[in-house]
Length: 143
Picture 1 (cartoon, helix red, strand yellow):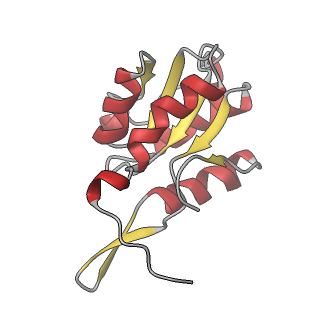
Picture 2: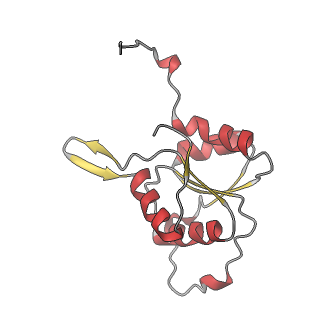
C-alpha cells in the first residue's frame, strides 16, 4: 500500500454524487424526500428532481393524523447531513419508505468533530431511520 497524492480536483463530495446517482440508477424517479443539508439539496435541484422536506425543519407531529399522509408520490428518500433533523422528518420519511420509496443515504459517518465535541450527523440519523423502517439504506458515498 503506497500513499497516493491527490489534489482537490480529484476528490468528490458525497453531496455532488447524490443527484447524479439517483438520475443514473433510478431514471424514473422525480420526487425526492430529502432529510439532508443544503449541499445535497443544491445537487438534487441541479439534477432536476422535485425536492420535498426542505420546509419541514420546523414542523411537529403533534396534532397531525399521520395515517392521513399520502407519501405515495415520493420516489426516493435520501438521508444526508441534516442539522435540522426532527421527528416530523423521521415520520414522513419512514412513511414514504414504507409506501415503497427507494431508501438511500449519502454515507454512514455517525458524527463530525468540533475539537472534542462529537456532532451527530448522517450515520446517526440513518441508523435511527433503518431501525424504524426495518431495512438498510443503499449507501451512495464512502463506506
